[in-house]
Length: 371
Image (tube, rainbow, N blue to C red):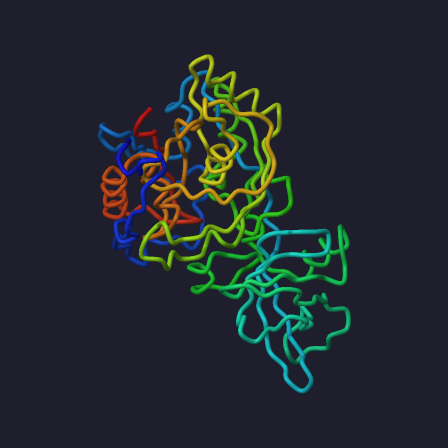
């Protein structure tokens, strides 16, 4: 058995407290670096000293023949405000769409969920005192735990997409939204330059650091790049409320790996190149699609993979990712990748040196502990 594995080879349950640390509130970035590739980059290689760099140094840290995998999902304005009217009762409702399940339906997190019941009608795009003409209408078809609901809209397909885009707001992470309102800058800032597949309600934030100039420098270095699609859901922001990792449930997200991307990854591995996932979303999708022998093929579907220390990585050799919050599933993932004690030391260094955390923050380049 590897450390932190059970007798069946699965990651053993761990106390969530192991992934806690003190993060000063002022370390959470409210705006991105300008230009994007001017953000800081902490290089973490187990067994070696930490290195403070900047993102535009990335080409020099890679070798010809390495392959970077990006998530090309595109953030939609998935935060909707509306009203629920039931007889004489009126309630203001906020819904964040997080997974499309049909041409006319979305799973969403509703607040306050306790004010909704199956069969309720919600009119989005207006506040409780506004005229409801032309509002985006939906019916609550199912109600789950934690405020999750299934919304069936009166519109479907591209027309529904257009109306959501018109009525919706960019779903900034709660630790940013609690400190300032979304504005027009966020429509560009909270989107990668290569986003093309509509469907995410949260950005694959490691990709926010890339610029055309950085892509050109990577090309000149001989580093290959390929794209996958994983539509990031609002579940990525949900806190871990369980005391034990075995008791936490991940929300599923949908994605796909094309045959061309799979073949490029297999070829890179065969020639001795390293596969670097840009973002935890790319990593989670690649590991979901990986075969036990470390190869990958065309793949599509939903994944709720939850990676904690003890997980055996099959595809990814390096990971570029932002800095994550205490007790989060993302800090658990990076601890599985580079080692818990290594990441504790790296985060202590980052906090002491003024690195900026989370979606609009700085980045790290991690190399796998067992590579």
